[in-house]
Length: 310
Length: 96
Figure 1: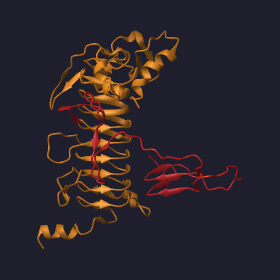
Figure 2 (figure 1 turned 90 degrees about the vertical axis):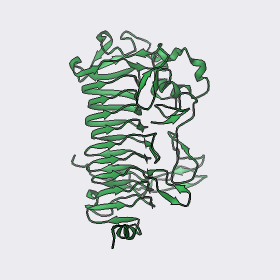
Figure 3 (figure 1 turned 120 degrees about the horizontal axis):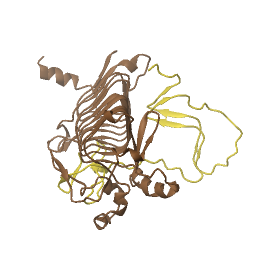
Figure 4 (figure 1 turned 30 degrees about the vertical axis):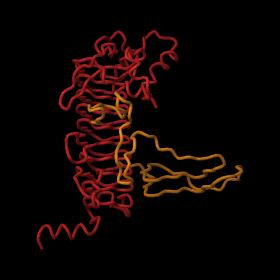
């Protein structure tokens, strides 16, 4: 048989399972999760083919979700990308390809790599994780959208224009340019680029200033955006969520991020230690004055951003 | 990154026009908005006595079925016992 004939034979079965591997073919619909049915199967490596859909969660050792491809499901209907309608839980590493949508979270004992969200390709280019992401080391590509928190026991590397609705927490955190992040806890080292927004009034950074590489200002929507000079442009709802990713703060093109026309935004006083709270492992950089007594007053104005307008 | 109004943006809502980022699922042809919290609707009179777990990995103990004295008068649907579907329930902690 030729290689094509072998592939054709293999693709007649949606899924191939052995004692050590599970392979879901490209462009397939699998009606349940890929879950161990007996002891030991949780250590199988799982590979999800391009533009397939799994109607459930995936549990395995190393889990790879392949990059989406232009696959015709039926005449005139192209597959919208790879879709996991549950979570991915791994006793090894997880890799998520471009063109994937995970409707749950990612949890790995090892490392997690999430490939970039691409807009200039003919195949599905989105990368969306609805839930939380946690692993030993987590690497997130350009433009990825994560609606939960990202937590790592060692290091988180975030590329450019990444959106993380909840907080980011790890001993070592590297953030590129133009990102929108819900909150930040970096215990040992922090490196952060330009045009980033953290939608909180307080962030936790390393105690040792030498371990903080922050050459540019980091935007907080509180308190500057509470009195937005361009409010009329956001009069249609939902104003809070739109202001978090504000186009007047930073303008994004495919490969560049530049300053927008607004200059009224607030930045975290990273280098001004007078308004830092020293905690055991962190320094808390706060935009709420240290001597504030009526915390409810501040909380009301600051937490609207932390809740993301929802 | 999401694209709308001929520009790329961060977040899940276009800051320029306010439209929510959408994504096309394998189920249905219409793009669905992302970030919409998926709710389970329990209406007045429904009675949930156990736990319902679907597509999940749960670490820890799931409450066992018990038959306490009935103290609730049920008018609507009644769901009893623990229901788990496409899920794994780990009683013991993993040795991480």
